[in-house]
Length: 480
Image (tube, rainbow, N blue to C red; front, side, top):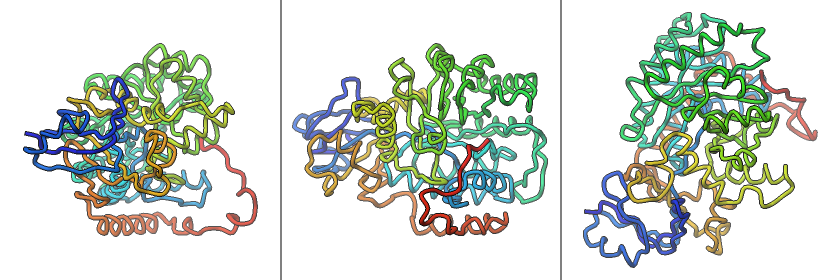
């Protein structure tokens, strides 16, 4: 019996043939797509379907996948008014301070609600970040995030792992008491979270490992022998549990060094990847390592990710939001459009990154980067029923011709009307079926106010006069 039948929809399948099916129907049983094709052929299924969703005037796309983001950032939006160094320092104080599991649960629910309402069904998110500050001093923080994910009905691959040396690191534990945290403890916590929560397709939470990026500039600060010792420990843990390994912030020369450390391979997903050398690109190509390109991120201002060039060489390049702060959000439609304009301006060529390619980067290529292309990333029989319905009855999406072009160039998160994950309707006509927006927003506001106050950072919420009249704020420098 068909549980849900979506009828009279235009389907951008992103399947092997990249079919665009007008007046399509999609049949779902339990958590899988069981049929997709012309509505005239599947119409008889409506007689015994548990629910029929009439989707005339809608476009169906696979659930969007955000391949790089940061938990925690959702509660520190705009803090520091665009001063990047100040914002990074604030993250470090908050993410090691007395921000209990409630902070991380409230931030997760806020981010999940934003994703849900924007058609993002799966994401990779680092448990912290900024400058490699990960909340892996105790499993309670990651567990709070995973519980929120399951309640929301979405999927999160939570990236956990060690900070950069020197160790031990000063943290405040779940009870707010100061605690010194070492490398071994962070790996123990990471392994505990993998054991408890790594069940992405069924439970909605996966867990992977994150390791700081090292390069030639670090070798005086962190002895190479110590880097290799830490790398071996992380690689051993990854191999024992067969999980993804991700790294945040690669740039010129660091990928070649990561290859020398034995970090690369089909299990690896590297983010940002700006100003790469030829040796870096060869390392990606030869090892089958994937890249998460974040076109809206600050790092894409300080350097350029050669995404089109890597795609031309057969490297899997997915899209990431880089989280909800300091100056961006989880609207993957924005990031698709940003990617097109970013690289077209570089090449002065409007044919670069055509709309079908950027949709692939946010769907099937992202699924491939996660090692989940057999289950996610396209609307095909046998795959998970992750379906996003976009309301095309908007001025900026009219006339309703060339749906691929309209979705990638003109649509935004507010055009998402209905979302199904695992065959379950989690957003219906812009109303969340799993999260109460009023409660989520109130809890997030309270958690952010408390954390920022306790960390002594309330002054960073002031918007200074320098944001007006001048063509630029005081010069920013890349965070180190």
